[in-house]
Amino acid sequence: MQSQFRNRISAGFTLLMFGFMYLPLSVLAFYSFNQAPNSAQWTGFTLSWYIKFFQDSRILSALRDSLLVASLATVIAAVIGTLLAIGLAKYQFFGKKLFQGAAYLPLIIPDIAIAVATLVFLAVIAVPLSLWTIVAAHVVFCLAYIALVVSTRLVNLDPHLEEAALDLGATPMQSLVMVLLPQLMPAIVSGCLLAFVLSMDDFLIASFTAGGGITTLPMEIFSRIRTSVRPDMNALSVVLLVISGGLALLAEGIRYQGEKKRFT
Image (tube, rainbow, N blue to C red):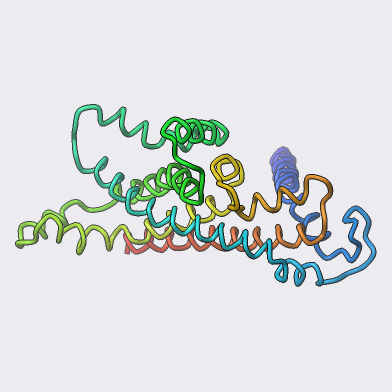
């Protein structure tokens, strides 16, 4: 009897937790099909809002800027983050623990602090705000996520494979490129997908570091919903949710397959 009661309590708590997490998203998706311009009142089903934002030049321009920023930031962070993780895992040097903590600090620092600090730094060194300043700011937190994902993979790798390659005459660079990186590739791809999604979804840091004429997709959405929430913005948000969720699942699937191959 007590066991059944505990099971019911656990099931109820689980339903409450998932309802709290996903009910607002369900409401957003529901009203994205609302025919009325006023999203607070349901008048009928339509797909016109999904078609409308694809024909909006401002939305397409903001999407182009977001894709460019996310792609550049992810590529740069992938290189730096992977080398950072490898260096911290394989080399010993003075202050390593302190440097390791500083490298992962962007994971816990509030976005507003990173945004303000980046803006002040750019003002001090007299760098004008542009698309490249957004990329630089996004690289800061993207490389921390990629380095973290890659470092977890490095912990579980067999170090004797690299030693065997060196014993067989490979140079350290050949060992890195031909032995280590192929083993790390699932983690690198997974971290890149995660970083890409985070960069695409970022609003706060981008809004502080964007130059004139540069508008990312989250910035464009925010500028339109300050006065009222419209169904076309609901539809755009649903599309972003689906794409972000799909990329996150893909990243987790790649990471899982990489871990699975390690044990087989």
